[in-house]
Image 1 (cartoon, rainbow, N blue to C red):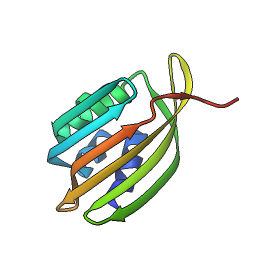
Image 2 (cartoon, rainbow, N blue to C red):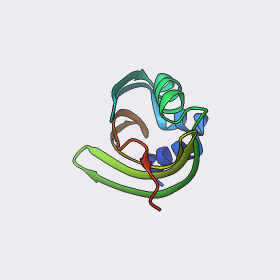
Image 3 (tube, rainbow, N blue to C red):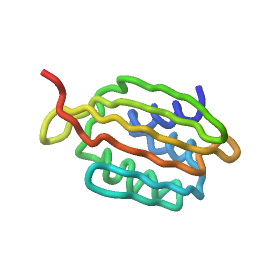
Length: 122
């Protein structure tokens, strides 16, 4: 399993320690959600202030990792993943596309585009 898939599985499990292991301590992170732009310069800030702090915080329960796809081109890799989740407003799907580069087998450059929480189909 490559670092991108490990990252996606750690997001789905909300596993802080595994996320920190997948990310470099110094990271160039930018994220785009439907309502905001996000940045972080450390793996810890990326995890604590963005991924588990805001996007998938305590009020979000992730039920399943529905799909993971990986690919690579030139010096960049990609992981796409889809989550089934729930918060106080109901049940949703969320898909993220992450492009990343590694240093010493850890993600040191990361760009994520997020679909936002989309309603589950009936």
